[in-house]
Image: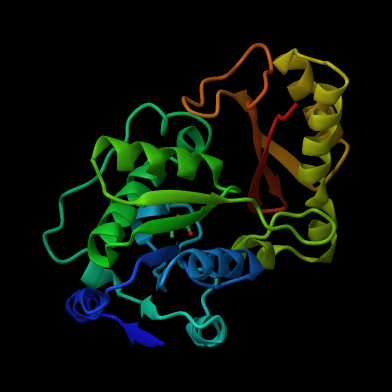
Length: 278
Ligand code: PAF
């Protein structure tokens, strides 16, 4: 495994590779969910590259950039075990050099859900991912379904900017009790960890109502909200039943609709989602 912090050195190694390259962009503090992406990338490509960069541009001024969990040594040990070929670990100066003023702004699909609570978040995500794609030049890039809106934004950007790579979406990796894996789960104390299960339970309720032929999006959201409100440590940010491509809110739930939510558990904001299937 080769580890690079400079763009020039990474590019040189990349250009020496004749095989297809799968790419997993991350902000580090790797968990099993990331490793599932790495394994998938490894299985589908001749080589795999992973980036580790806690991107300041996607954090709001009141968000957790400074305290975002970091453990680069552990991350590298985990990636070595997975037989990762290339790791790109730039610093902020490498990614945002002095005088940086060029941003990638994906309109519309960034305006709702995460975008309305976290203004500027997707501008930071789209910009850094575009830069990473430009540096890494992957054939395929792998993203987790947990960040459903991020996937929509990145697919839109890849299509709109004629980027020549395939975006591969991998199902959310969950703890045995259903909690979606996230680097932010480390913030939860024992009581909050238990309370956090309410996200998965409320999505389960939505699925159950949908299977019982409930088609009113409003009723699905109301029932989910009622369940979450029974959990004293949880506070709802949003619950949505939306079109999976435009992310516009639906009045009638339909096959393929994205049911997503963001909930504060204590001070930690967690997100999760499911797709309604037949
Ligand atoms: O999903 C993440 O970890 C980040 O948003 C990403 C895609 C690595 C960009 O910083």
